Image (cartoon, rainbow, N blue to C red; front, side, top):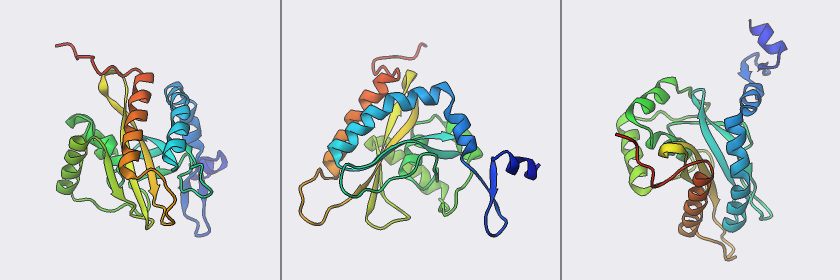
Length: 215
């Protein structure tokens, strides 16, 4: 079975003969109409966000036990920091993962955590600490935390809602601070921009803030 998966491009061997997944599964999933529609609706607004914030940004979803980047736009600055499309991230130790978990009901959150597949370098998170962080996200309306991989990066993530108010994705800005005095939007201004962009994207994919679930 391993040989067959390798021949068909689903897995690959590294120099230590360890097998890892390729992006083929992501590419197949990316052809699904819901994901294509979400990416299509988000890209113009992600470009707007990058231009206004002068930072890179990406859109991620929870899929097959992991947080997956499905769209990304680079900063218009001379340099930028961003994640490649198809990259998988930790669910419990990233701002995007916290947003995707925070707004689910208890049953869905339990399902996500039960199916969670840890990625390389993902930190162990005490359940009590995690639930406290998720509560804080719900209170603030977004997640913000220093990157656990790279110094100088502050990750800011906001939820994207769909029909019925369900959070289906997260937009993240890996904020890089300028130290040369060049005027750029600060983190608080970027949060305002992100909130506006996420509200508009949510409306594009069917979220109605005045919708009330039938009794």
